[in-house]
Amino acid sequence: MSWGLISEMGHVAIQTTDIEGSIRDATQLLGLRVTEQGVREAYLAAADVHHELVYVDSDENGIHALGLVARDGDALREIRRRVERENLQVLSERPASAGVQDGFSFVGPEGWVFEVYTGMQAHAGGPLSFGPDRYGHLNFHPQDVKGMMQFLVRVLDFRLSDVIGDDFAYFMRCNPDHHGIALIQGRGTFHHHAWQTQSIADLGKLGDRLNRVGRELIWGPVRHGAGHNIAAYYVEASGAVVELYTDLEQIYDDSRPPVRWGAEENWWNMWGSYRPEEFRSFGIPPASRR
Ligand SMILES: [Fe+2]
Image 1: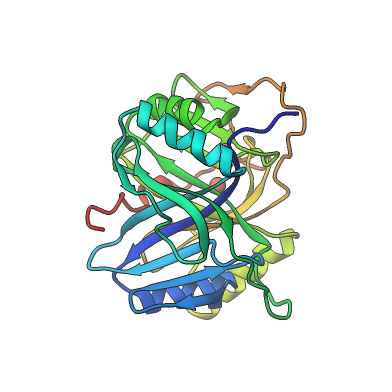
Image 2: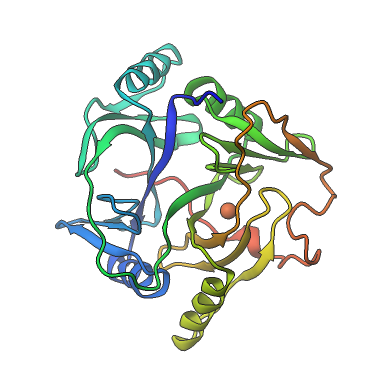
């Protein structure tokens, strides 16, 4: 088992036109806690770290940055060299977020900003409540899905776990979690950030909390074929989709070949083939202003 340059998914930073609504959704519906609040930014986490989600007050909804944890300082420097070799624009040679020791940020394919770092501060959680354990993965819809997949392999050492159709979707991992990043061919938008919990009952409780405030799940609970996670989804104030999941496949054999699905094979729900038509129409683009 050999691990690559990225050891963990770090965080998602979202620009939102309704920062209070976004924070309310993340704390009262999902169960995250605010760890630091600045004038323009709020940092939130489920795990015992400084942040796994950042909201940035803005006049547009969009993805500010996708954060990834480098394995160590050597890995961080190797990624910095690869970014140089790829001629990608470096936005900052220092960490763009608070609570992080070392890192840099750059613009990847299709305008997505990546923050890579080491040494995030610990931040102890309070007493256990209904929140998830931690941030687990993100899912976005590049226009050139194969190009994005190859970029993630070439620059960030991600591996393929499942492949859907002929360049339709790729599920990619950086550690034993079946996917840290999922790519589905689309219109260049971010679809969801996903949070791990221990029990399918927690997905039901999420539905109850939504119901209490007159909102609803947009899909699920379902048992995905690719990744085998049981998942439920809602839309947060920024327009991004949020997934709460449990029972994701863990891959300890690094030589496991990618599982290949036909485009029409039911890779999305092993419990039934129905999929709400509008599910993939949700999401937000990369932010144009930083
Ligand atoms: Fe997901």
